[in-house]
Image 1 (cartoon, one colour):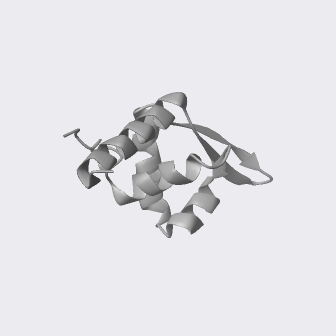
Image 2 (tube, helix red, strand yellow):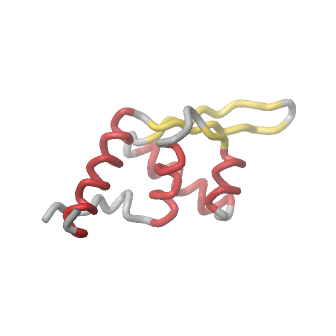
Image 3 (tube, one colour):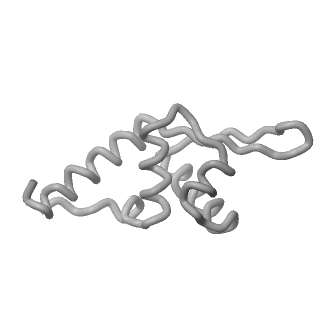
Length: 93
């Protein structure tokens, strides 16, 4: 059986990657609302995904407020697809 990617096996990180698979980009506030996570936890998990090269983070300003935009990378897309295939092997699909 294929091993499940431990980085993606976290509920919040998997939720973020799943969302980013279906959109061109998403900002921090959108991801926070969709995942119902705290700002601190989401920030830590985004940093982990970014360090792994699975997402890219673009930090900027929207008026006077900071704005972080996230998008999935090719490596992140591939890791997610491999994760889904590994999961399917556990489910005998």
